[in-house]
Length: 180
Image 1 (cartoon, rainbow, N blue to C red):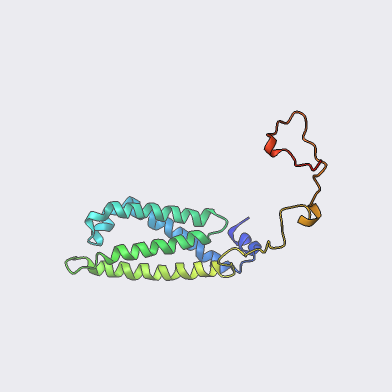
Image 2: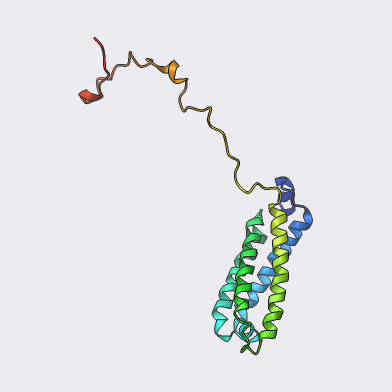
């Protein structure tokens, strides 16, 4: 079953264009993740964040995992929300490089604008995928249930004729009370 078929079968309001957008974002994550893994030092230099190459590589792993989740799972919704969270992390990290003594802050501003645009797409896609789902599980009413086979009054005295089997040892205090 493809993502499109599953979305229609779910009946959650996900139309084909939203699922196509999700898949596109999944491939974008894979591509960005590969770039961050393969050339983290170049990206760090471009942003004036030379001492952050290891962090960029870690973000690449996150992007790859998120992209794989979007592309390989039947329901991409949680993975798209993971992209939104990752975007917030990316924006916060990039914002730290906007300081006046960074000679590459123009590149950082460009990167911030690009990430903000992708964040908007991620958020729109996540909202559309989540659109018809309840935010929490429905609250079930079990007030009419007792956990007993019959009403408590109907069960009163049912075990009066119970006799403890001979092979069962019971302390005196726990033996059935008899009025005889």
